[in-house]
Image 1: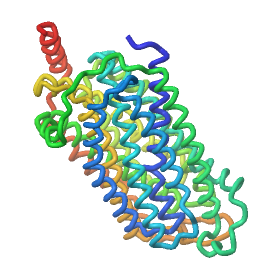
Image 2: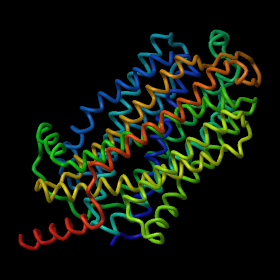
Image 3: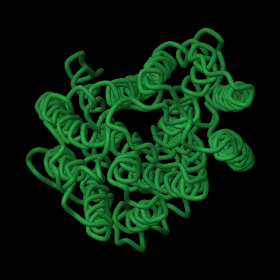
Length: 482
């Protein structure tokens, strides 16, 4: 059984990893589009192209990890290499030189974001691939998965809660006065936010490196399955043959697209729809409650539904999706009614983020179980290959969602159009039709995507708890006969 030190350090690694991911997924569009002035359409294309590139990079990285053999194991070397390089690129991405012109900023955003995706893959695949490699199926695997996802939620919540609180603070501490040559490009608080993001990202990058080092020192692979190195063609054929892995992959895509569409646009909702001079305070509180709810959902709600209510994971999945749909409907109704008080808006936020927290655990358990299914069906235990798809599809979902959000921002003409040296109510700078369009995109579109995901999952997924028990029993018999 896993010890407390191993569990705690593995969870700490998830905190750092998802701090980095959430910072990129939630704020790269806002940073380049709203602060630096890169066109929303250009950013949408960049984010989508980067994810298409990952379609080739991520699976190849899964094969590389699977074939790695060192005295430190196959996972930890890549965890360290990926973390160090990703932390550097993350800082560079949020430290764009303000002297660059429009085309220079587009090129800078494209290069840094694509390289960031490549280096993130280098550490994310081995991180999640370690679960099947040093745990048995059933309760131990579910327990570690729940812990890791809960800690990942902590990392995401830290970024969601603290970014727009600390960015202005750090910006005021280190930005200084706007240089005269940049005064026209960065009016008001934009210069403060530009510098605040740079120093906030530096702090996140340092913590990311520290947490990964602690994990690599404390967590050792208990077993490393010897695998024949597969070609890229063999790997794709194996994934296609593992119909359950592909079903889970498709489900992950649609579930995350729905969530990321909202997470990309919610900052614009508070800034340009709710408005007010202190819009970022309401945004921070909304994220604080939502992030806390996501963590509690993983740590308390999921175990409650699983162990107390005795629901199987498939039923829990349907419950969580229903919660999310109800939350989106409530958000649309409240926004349409003109509710600007933060308290009522917390209700739909709690429902959506509770659903996200539960789904984080369930989807990872589903994916881990497909490793056993694939071993029984295909005779190969391709944990790195399978989990490389999780990395890819999550980033693909964020890319698709960012593209949709970017196109919406471009059409709705939502940008930093209020130029003032002091505080400003940004909600007065956009039309009522633009506000309504924003509400519809961030609520009705995610609902549609969630419904599509449920249809895909319901029609193809067969790995019930009973089926998993049968698979584990069959695998046990095979090992005994060897």
